[in-house]
Image (tube, rainbow, N blue to C red; front, side, top):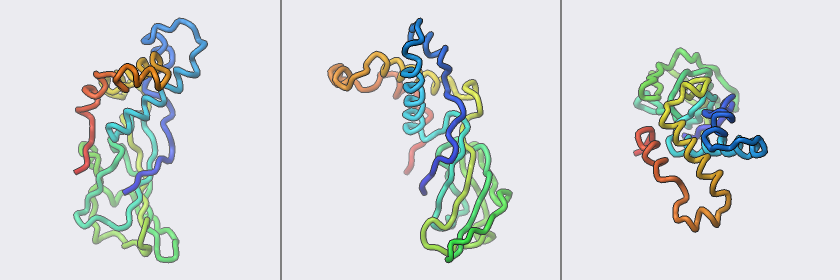
Length: 189
């Protein structure tokens, strides 16, 4: 089930001033670089954990309704279902009431009664469900271990700006990042 980003986060998990202080950079000459590193580190942490740090909108695309009436939402954590559609054989969309889904916020899943929903008419990508995922709208909502992982990645990438330096050091990522991310990883079976 592919997930398509519709609306990226409106903020980053770290403020520029906070990151500059962590890096012990007193000038503003590298602000553009540091901002890009923050965004890159957030994306890396999100990819490794399959979680959205700051609230963002995603579209889940399915071919058919799962028979068990359950959809695991990735990226997690699920906040809300905002829209749902089923497409017929001609490609026309039929809107489904988001209330047809029961969000299991703890498991980041949607429960529903598959027999109560219309079957898609096209063989592929017949169902679209739009969701909001993330810890919240501000950086303060993001768990501190994930924010620390972003800090460490930014610092590592800031200090090791060339591929040669990273390869020569023998480590592409700081050692503590994997340990910080481990409890938050969502593994597929």
